[in-house]
Length: 351
Ligand code: PEP
Ligand code: MN
Image (cartoon, rainbow, N blue to C red; front, side, top):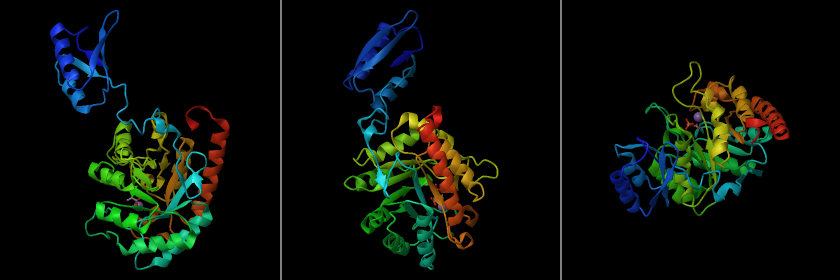
């Protein structure tokens, strides 16, 4: 929909606009109002180049896109009935929990095995374990490919599906070949379109689930959904959206908590929302409250860093990880809130 700066386009302006959209297989349909005339673009108005050309015209106020730029992720798309199942849970029907270590310690595999058994006992459905890590400090531990074997061994021991972050194509290949069930796109890579494309291409033929974190630097919801669209456009729509806090930091927290975007996401997309309170608030003592807030906001699940011995954890601040005992208690409370939300179906709290 084209909104001109003046009340209507002059004949020359209308001619120019008609030629531009015509080059993209569209036509213009004026809609004459009492004061102002607006111009509908009839055809597929999603072509970004066409929109850019129109927006560059000095006499255009703005273009309102009616069709969604994320045609697969849009709540109105044919995929709205798509269901994602992992770890015995159908997302949306039951509360979904990912838990485990930030980073696997390749020198101490038994810590991951103990953590895996403990998070399973606490009620988690997927085990997380960082194999390769995006570290701010280039001299900090960057992860180790050996940890992939440890993660898969934890899967064999517990039966839990496993989740690991991949940051480039070689890691993506290794993770898929090893049989990782959930690929995590980290906050730093959520705007890395070539990686998103590579992941989309690689998982197209498989059942792999992708956990797409929200970038620290994302603003509008559409940016998040467009990132998901990159992956889905290759044919695998098993995508979970993961708000994990944004920049700038809210003083005292690790990031600015953003679980409150969940109802907005729910309005725009069918994709399940799995909130990560650990990287959001960044302190074990704040994590349960943030997790419960996420469920109250309508999240379908949670991704929570947990370690049998948080003080022996490597990777993110050991003060961030919950003990399995606190995880278990948080899951019980989250489940209660989930049940309440299900029973009430009131306003934004209903999913
Ligand atoms: C992580 O999950 O350990 C991690 C690095 O997360 P994020 O990409 O959200 O910072
Ligand atoms: Mn972490």
